[in-house]
Image 1 (tube, rainbow, N blue to C red):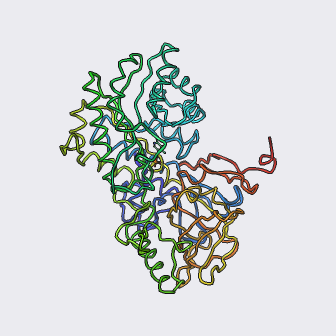
Image 2 (cartoon, rainbow, N blue to C red):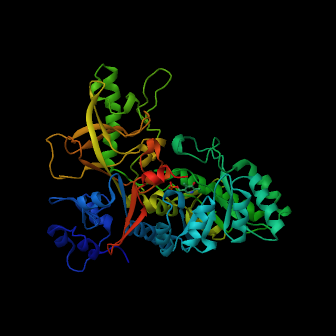
Length: 531
Ligand SMILES: *Cc1c(COP(=O)(O)O)cnc(C)c1O
């Protein structure tokens, strides 16, 4: 069952117009409805009109009083809907497809329970992720163990529980084999591959399956490795894995690596074994903004930089007057033809990427073949995916209070929030693009949007929440509350810390029946300074 009208009505989101549009008894997915109303993926979640915005049926002030700010609110039906969408693609195009939720994108028992109930397994990379997945009800055979530094202890536990182990190197494969032999066990193992040379198919910044990566065994070493499998008869070697990186917006890198994995599968078959598993990892993108917004974003980067070269500093769009994904050549000129960095719009968001991969063509031993046909020719191995961001990224919003809006450098607005970058951790790693808005007194707008860089409240200068100019509907005042959309993956929890002895904020999960689960409560003084 999809999220249906009842959910919308419960949250009072459908205005008269939209309800009329749907007609009696009609069902519509949250995202479809959202597109109609341009609410992003939050159609059933937020009511962005009226005197006070309601989130999941509660007024903004209720949330603030109960949990304080900053606050992360997750919406369970959005996660369910995402898992179902991926499953539907597999049902339609390749029934031997399997989902393993990448735990690190949002590790929490309640989230694990949701995805497990929807039929997904979990991709784990530490003992506590493993334990949490098992205690949340994941069947051990649907747990895949990843990670490039698995301890002996973790390998032993994985073998005991009969999890699938993704060996990260040939050296690690030998360790797994040795431990399994001592235990008298026959673990299921696949090999993670890297060392792909894909040239310009994707940005270096998001490519973790190339030569310069700490992950995976090098593609070139696999033929020799396969010859050694005979010395490890107790290991059930089932196939190959790769994970290209995160927020992979283009289809080509997936097709390129999948073609290579299928070629490796054929090599494996030539040793007299079956290739039972091909795992293409995660990285399926979210569209954080729509196509026009993304095009405009890139234009603004360019315009700002070019204007600055002519002495007009007022239009600079990226912090420090950097050029984003436009690189400058040795002659100091900016290459405007190519955005060589993360993109925040994709024509293939979430499950659409898997659909495009399955409908696309891969190159196997020089021949271009439809993906499904190529997999069938390999004996129809299980096709495993490890989506993280694409299952949870658009399931959450982050709320934070405005500290100040001020001028810097004589030209630019800087907005500071009572929240550190550790609560939007992706901003530590790259420059994530999100939709921002002021959520109190939501309908009041200035004639012109207010544009500003955004800094956090921590005492180091890397604490920048937006290194590009975000756009708000009016000039924010001290005490206003801003909302950041699509913060469900990595951001709110991956880097959470007590930097500057600020409490880590609360995280709350809301379900359709109105049930709230506090995923993490806000730290107290005693907790911050406890042993
Ligand atoms: C992080 C990770 C994923 C998930 O990546 P997303 O971009 O969140 O989909 C999948 N597989 C492995 C091995 C990972 O490390």
